Image (cartoon, rainbow, N blue to C red; front, side, top):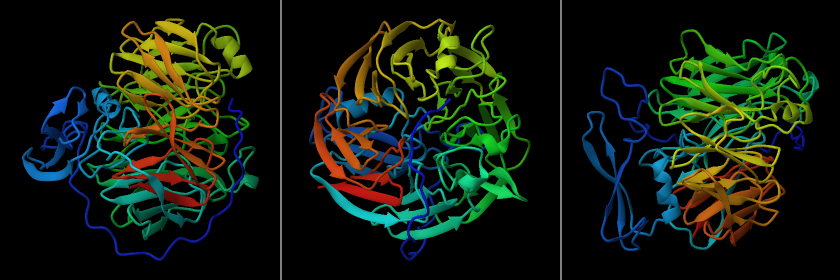
Length: 518
């Protein structure tokens, strides 16, 4: 059950006048090996150092040279050269994070399929100040994407926007559908309810995928849209409701994921947990054709896969999700309060649940409020509402009570960031940096001010986090000391910023605001 508070919201102001569309996107990549040569997430941008080095961190006078490989694997040439220091904390994340392309793109929630939230190519931030603000036609709950210099934003008015990431000018707007009024729903706290989950870009099909909640013939339904990020033209539109749940009671809040030629869509319930819903992961081919596949948590009710990060993709291409409280409070475990590993075709491969799962279900103290955090040394840190942190072996989750360690940490909601073996956890009483040692034991490195609670990202030498009342914080990754503090418009509770070139992009209840370092 999700007991959270978010203000009801309405439509924002109209956007700016459209500018000319951005040129065609760069050739992309494919995670599933095809017959024709394609590049992978890891190969999409080949980066190397030129100049002296000093261990893990780049030397201040070294260059980071990145090249975009052609489809045949040959290098087209340099497209990025950062002649500035790149923080060691960002470089260490490369053990588990993959690069999202030479355009310094942000193609999915927290940048890569592992949800690391780290941009190792971001220039080191100087003095940060407001750059621009663009009002859109509704609240932005989803994390913005950046694809080839175009910022893609999704609104609760069921619209997708393409903005110039440098200026905020509107390049295109695509209204996918009409959102659902709160008055139509049995419960909930977003009004209207449109596109809530963070979209995902697939560079193989060159489409951005998003799910819009709407009504068709008077019935609530969810539609998967595939949109060209260069023009906003809609290429795909198909229903993608969870098959074993009432669509009216099901909410699509978790981020979409693209891997293995499919787009994966997680579902939980509305705030208040009313109605007949069950946590479900649904997948469609990125072509928009063929049958849907799905996995449903084997509970009589609830067990939502609702947290904003959506599924995490591990090194083997499997999906990891954390599941909310389910119906059973005694007897046999029914899949809730858990970490599940699913294959690309959505078969259950492995699982973990605390020995206290029945009690957790009964008192709403489950693991469903965050996503798994994969560390470079082979562990998975799972944190939820109960304040207990569990360390699991990523290769063998351990079943019921099979954790490596458990310890008191904090109640946490939203997405973490992971740099090597350090996990930045969005605790309700202040962000924490947690190091997982070689034996799997977590150690708190620092605890930020209680006002800093938002889902963090790491880049430019800082850890960035939001307070939904209206503040963007930049923290020292080594100490948690506040280095930057800037006012922003109010955001949703789980809002997370996006990093791009030398800027920070913030989704708000009225649109997008950008901040840039000097």
